Length: 190
Image (tube, rainbow, N blue to C red; front, side):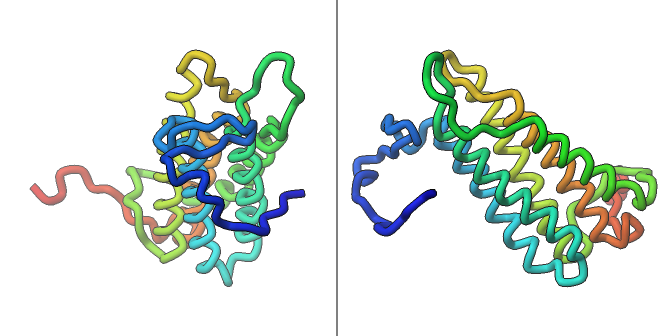
């Protein structure tokens, strides 16, 4: 259980922050950027949920995703090290659940004939914003994983990759199952 009874500690006033392992890193550190951007994705999904009164099934999926994103932040906040006790990690079962949800949301969608411009309903537009933040988090995680001694689990990267797909499909579901998508028309304004 997490207990947060004091919100400010002043320990970050020197420009560092603590990982879950207790190790201190500069606030601009790539690992901090990775889990900070995962948190930003989570906040954007929270805004989406404000617009889902008519979509309880999607809202329920997003509640699970928000919890998964906290798991993912915890995973990134404690780098996996040889010989250390295992901490909370994102699992492939969480990735598989996302895939099932993508398939369920994708089933009734109209076929795409062009790229989709972000927009449509407020929920769809906010889902696109969450998708782009998610993609940024994924890029940072991949960059982090490419660094020596900066492990990031395959499941964590897969989760973010699938989540961006989920958010795209969910945005189309909120645009009348794709019928209300705003499509890109190449060269339209030439």
